[in-house]
Length: 198
Length: 198
Image (cartoon, rainbow over all chains, first blue to last red; front, side, top):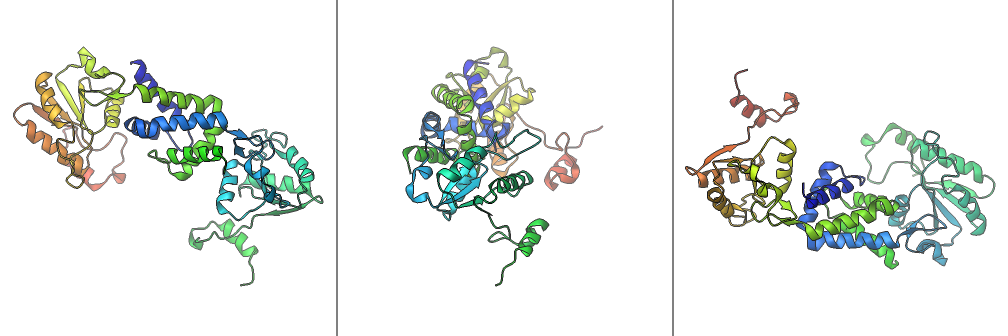
């Protein structure tokens, strides 16, 4: 096997480590890249180098940006006193795409998990307490995933903050465009319990 | 939006162009890369640059390597007189993983398609005729996909080569480990027609 073939194999192995890609799809992606060397592969490698050199975690909230304090934390008009707690940067981005939330975020970086030995100190929970005082937060909105670990973490945070600040969480119910027949039982009973006058 | 955020968005858009990745999985992959900047993202960008600079198509067979003549075409012991015709480099790689074929390959680079105006000149078919004489090919093995376009192309090539060289094709039948219940009707009837004494 020549050096170059080994380079291609190495590239395939690296691509296969990305979430959503396995060995077979990594191979397809690399072949596609090789066929489009000039228009896609070289610019993609350049973009990766640029982001790799500049990206960093916001020291305040954990969002990803290029400065020590991210755009959202730096924006004066986002100091609304509302703080939205999310597990991961991907969730923050999802909330931002919704364009409904005007306050700031706090990215935990995971959920509490006894199995994986992840306690409050491993997450960004101590920093959360500091921020509530420093930024004059009046409402903490829990936007954690509706999984067991997510909900355990939500309960833990709510307990910690009890009496210090209002704690709310995203509503649970039927998704927009959702069909009852395809929903799980838990969602239907949650939506029934939380029913509103029409 | 800062320059850096725009860099990240650009990177996500580029990744979303890869086969097998959509906008959502591209976002997940980029977040994963950003979290693993030093161990994964920088080496991946380096590997892409290396392959982008060195990869080229073999002038003889169309395989991808780093030299004008690929390793397989250059290997004397693969001059067995057998030539395996495949649509794409991915198919060549799949055949090589099987480790059953000891001869050389010829990558067409697609299939004939009246709809897309792809005729023999657009594929590597003229070169195929040259190779049969130059390399003393005695058997051409058609390993094209079992799709309509693939089979049309196989018939076209078989006609062109009639009387000049033996033309065979991969056997069709039940895949190893395959369950009849999950096979399509065409495969079952092909396997029945080609039944062998046990």
